[in-house]
Length: 278
Image (tube, rainbow, N blue to C red; front, side):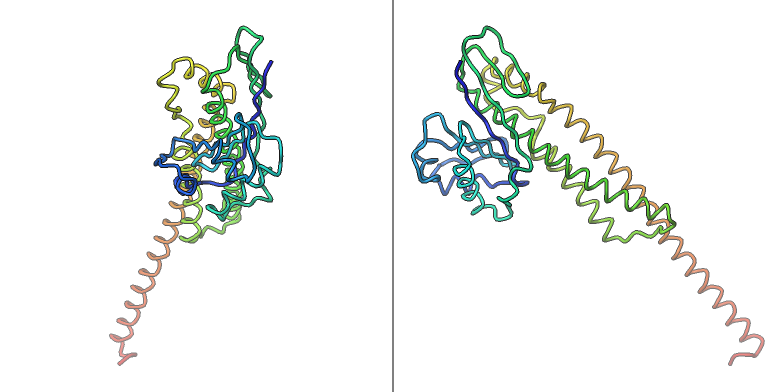
């Protein structure tokens, strides 16, 4: 039985594929849903060494990179350093934080079999590496976002504790920053990783679509997305509550100022009538 190995990393929120494509001399305009696939002479030029015909690297616009048939850590580090030249915010020393390994086995079996570590298929198809890499790329990107969600929850928990202690005032800047974090999180999940979108090849080759759907289901990407979406909706609901409380407090403060000014004006008028003031 033959084997193809995959190693996926989620290294940032966004990678500009067109910058890399231009530098590599690839005359193509990449859209969000298309991965940049590097292999052959182009990949050899980046790594500065010959590469095997089965080796390739898939770069995704939502910040994930998948290495196919690579086992040398120095090659992976060299390629990530190359990408860092286009995306300076990448922290190469922390690349193992969101990563996953997988394998494709083909031959010597009659039906497809999926496990946590590998997928077995009767016959190798050209679309297998791209579809497996896409699922892995989305999976590690979701893992990254799931951790970010935990940090948002911690921040909101601190705000709730302040409310419980009677510290009701929350600044507009703090509300705006927290709302922006939630919106960015939601954008990265729904708008950029595009969990619900399928690669183009799945629409043109029916059994490619079936293979992708099975991979998607096994990695529970749709279920994970639904959970994240429901948590995002809850975060929005909580922020609406904070905003309502904050605006109510400000409205009450303004009303008290108006009442105080009216009282002062009435007192001054009474004093003037009584002749106590000129």
